[in-house]
Structures are given as C-alpha cells and as structure tokens.
Image 1 (tube, rainbow, N blue to C red):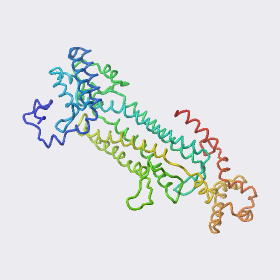
Image 2: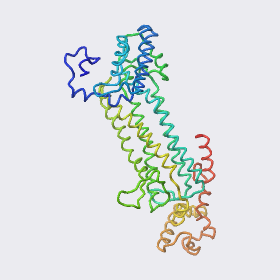
Image 3: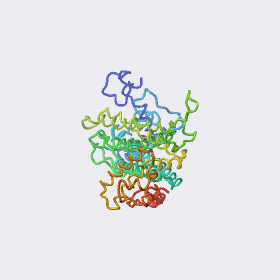
Image 4: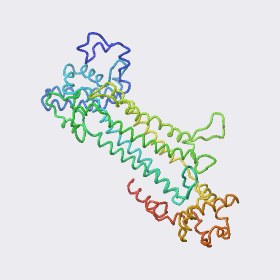
Length: 460
C-alpha cells in the first residue's frame, strides 16, 4: 500500500499496519483544505525562490505544478482516497509525480505542523467573514419585520408569563442587537486568526534563511505569529471561534423557541408558510414548524464543537501533538452548522406572517397594566412598594370576580385607595403605557422608530 513509501518513512523498516493507517488518516476531512494547502504552498515556494534557498527555476516549476494539481482537483481528475495519509502529503506526492525531483524541495524550511495551522487560518479568513455576512442576513430580516409591523403591540414576557405591553418591533430589535454583538465577536475572532504561523516549521523554527513576513504578506495575513512554539501548538483561535458560534446558535435557538410557541393554536401569534413547515405522516391537520425546531436542535452540535476542542487541548504538553489532528471536524462543523442555521432562520422569518390582532387581544385580556397602575399610585404620592402591594390586591380582587382591570368601577378602585380618580382608566390603555415610557432604549414608539432608522443606516 502507499504507506510503504511514506514521505516521512526513511527511518522505518516496516510498513505501517493497515488498521493503524486507517485510524490515523485525516484525508477524509482535511481534504476540504486543499485550496488553502495549495495557496500556502505556492506562497512558500515563491519565497524559497526569491530568498535563493532553491533556484527560481525550481520555484517556478513547483508553482506551475501546484496550479496544475489545483486544476486537476477542480476537474475531478485527481481525487483524494483512503490510501492517503493527509491532504499535505497527498498534494506533495502528486507534485513530485508531475514535476519530478524539484517537487521534493517544496517542503524545505517548513513542517506539516506550521502547514496545517496555516491552512486552517486561511480557511477561516475566508469562512468567518462569510459567516458574519450571513448573520447580517438575519439582522436585515429582523429589521424588515420591524418595519412591516411598526405599530403592532404584544405582551412582553418574563418567566413565560405575560408581563407588560411592548411593541413587536421592540422585540425584534432586541434580537437584532444580540446578533450585532455576534457579528462583532466574529470580527474580533478574525483579528486573532489573521496571523501567519508559516515558517515556524515543526516548532523550533528553521535554519534556512526564510522570509516569514514575505510569505505572510503574499497570503494576505496581517502579521506573523512571533513565537514558533505558539504558532503550531495552540488552537485557541478554534476554541474562540466555536465559542462565538455557540453564542450565535444560542440566540438562534431562543428565537426559534419563541417562533415554535407563537405558532401554536394556544398563542396564534404567527403563521409560517408551507415553504418552512411540514406535515404529519398520520395526522392530516398538522402543520409543524420543523425548520425552527431543527435550528433549535442544531445548537447541541455546535456546543459540542466547543467542548470537543477544549477537551482535546486541555492537557497537551508543548508543542505539537497528533491529538490536534482532530481539530478539523469540529472547525468545519461549527462554521457549516452555524451558517446553515442562520440562512434557515432568515428564510423562516421571511416566510412568517405575524398576527397583530391576536397579540393585542392577548395584551388587553390580561392584567398587563398592573405595573402602570402601581406607577399611577406612585405618581399620586404613594410609596412605590406600598403601591405595588395595593395593586397586587386589586389584581387578586379582579381575578376573583373574573373581570379585567378596565372592567372594575372607580368605586371599587377607591375601596383600595382614595388616590384613585377617574383618570385612572386612561392609564390602563396599553398604547398610552408605551407612550409613557421615558427611559432610553425603551419600548416607546418614538424611540423604537429612531432605533429602526439607525439600524437601516447601518445595515444598508
């Protein structure tokens, strides 16, 4: 088999056992990095030629050979298979088949250790901005929904119990703020990803007079990692990425949970289109919010990537250890699952109709104005804690009678406090409650409109 002539096999007398080869091979997942591997190798080869470590002719031959391999892979003429150890050796072996002995000089002054770290960072330099843009898609849908229902009023909840009236748009904008911070976290992660490990070699550097800065510039890195051991032996950038993706997924899951609940007959706040729902194999009447549920279900996979990489790295001595080969599946999982979930949430929002009349009815048939009633008494000079207790008693009284706060008479209110006057009923209007909010960032309609205008400027 291929391992009898492994590129690293000079000191070995026997071939690796086939079971051990299958167990240790990473080609099934690291072959996804072939573009980055060839990109890094081209930059390295050009640097070797320009520094005189190899001849310019040899460097040109290597670059042409690598470009040829890229074309072969694109066209499906060269494919990775289980006999190969990893993407790096597979491409290098193919290079030597194509251009001969000069291909064996490509690995001068580097190791697979700095090579794989470079590949990962190049991949993330492309994937993380794409992920940020996908977050922006969800943010834009949230803004569009806010603008589509600017006056819709709904119950705000704490403990999943109706609490106070708010604007639906205010609720949307809360998520928009969360996703904005998610996007900031991605941008922040990218700053630490954008540093080149190439040239650190195995971990101690190399005796060849390589130009790390030149290779880093050619690859578009902002800077080089200054310590060769650190450059190859840490994966904190993947841990940070998984953490950022986990927070994105947590926000998506909270929103998905609300959409699932709101779509029930019991709530009836929304209707999802056929494009993002499914039916039952046995119950003909069912219309299930499966896409939202799958988003919610994907959270576990992304959380798992964080625990995966943290656990892999937690006890590794410096520098490189083969355990670190296992970092790539969780890296791909975190990026791909988070991106797919964001894309689906943008679609779910787009395909969801909200029912303001159902939301407002829920506001008006419950005791959501109790806080405003307590504030009314406080404005009349009653200490707030006393007003709070008195209002609780009024709510209990209304519940016993099966009536709303609006349905109580002034005489009934005055049995609790002489501070109540006829104007109390105007304070029980939910829309007045919104207008009365004064604090910055509140659900006051004017403030919500201003927030929507500010977000439109930022997102478009």
